[in-house]
Image (cartoon, rainbow, N blue to C red; front, side):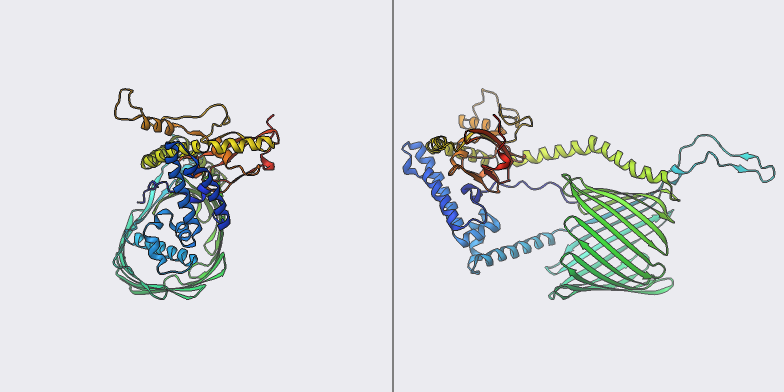
Length: 592
């Protein structure tokens, strides 16, 4: 089963954010940003020896950012894989490519190959467990039921109270694993066990799939359980928008050899619509046509089948809602020679790899069924609960309301505390992995602010004289819900050592004290970014801006700015990765 926790990522340099330019910045914009920072960090502009040393470090960083972003080849490598690509692997690609576009395409191809190799090294286990529950007695009334004596007609029977019987009427368990043999060949082993009303069976299947050079594959399989079975499957891309799947099998049993054949032709009707035509020959022969239309927010499927023993038409639609976690609302109707069924339900994503769904299905002749399904990574657990043989208002109502009530209780008592605990552990792990990097960024930010003092005073004096844009106060981090102004929010990351401990230096103590802050004052570096009474921050994390750092790794951060413009006091708050432009009409909320 796939672990839902992500590996903690190391904090990398963001050269775009450091220069405060957009990712599509021109060479001229990059040069202007470089010259602006060079005037602040050039070592010759600082006489103090300690400041000169810090200025040299920041000047070299500014120069490095400019060198990477101003060179088309280096920029293409950096855009594709980040700083690590500039060290070794990127230059190997440059030797066999010409243009930045070719570099990006080569990196994308290598990334796909690396992902394929990673998947090939995994067994990719998949499993399904289905438990059928018969709960029809819950909605069956026995109070008015009597057995009459054949002769006297006197009512007999037990009128005492008894709990309704809920039983497991069937169960199906299947499991499969994939084992890569070569780059093109994969072995798949699967097994299935099922039982229904005390009668069970099972099967074991082994198959080998080989990828073909013409964008297709062929697979052979053998199975034992319900009689030996030999089958062959193949898929081939016919044109750019059309493919063909063919499946044939022979199953040997007590009644002889039973052949089966299936072919499916699929074609892309437009950018978001696929059409399929499927023909089956065997015990259940049929001809079906299906149209599937899928967008980012919705999924629509329409199907018509003519066959033996059943023919039907079906329509299903699902719509995705993000509030903030993904929710899918689904409805479906199916009618044919077997009867008619109406189904509606909802699916909620409870974590990155887990989702929970509930659906109510009612119709003729199956009655009312509540379907509960939990999907976790590649494992699926489903629980169809049969509530009534007939369509009635009572089982439909309770099948709709009961899952909602149960989910709200479980979410409040179990899911939310678990998710919060997991998030806290992931954030703490992220902090520990990046601890040295965070302390380095803190020292760099403090040094940058000191080097900006003269620039800050000059820009602020100019803006005050023209009644332009003056940053009164700016805070960055996890802001208080009652408003950012007044005090900084702080939090302890763990027990602090006793004052008598000699293992921690004063520099480490200062770094840890800074690390404990969840909000930092960024008034000085923000004022230094003001140009001609305008402040523009582009879409990127603000923790990489000069004089900034991330005070709370893994937390949702915001930037709050209190400023004077034309002599009036205003305030605006933006999320970490959102762009900011001051002055802006929507931000001009007079606080005086």
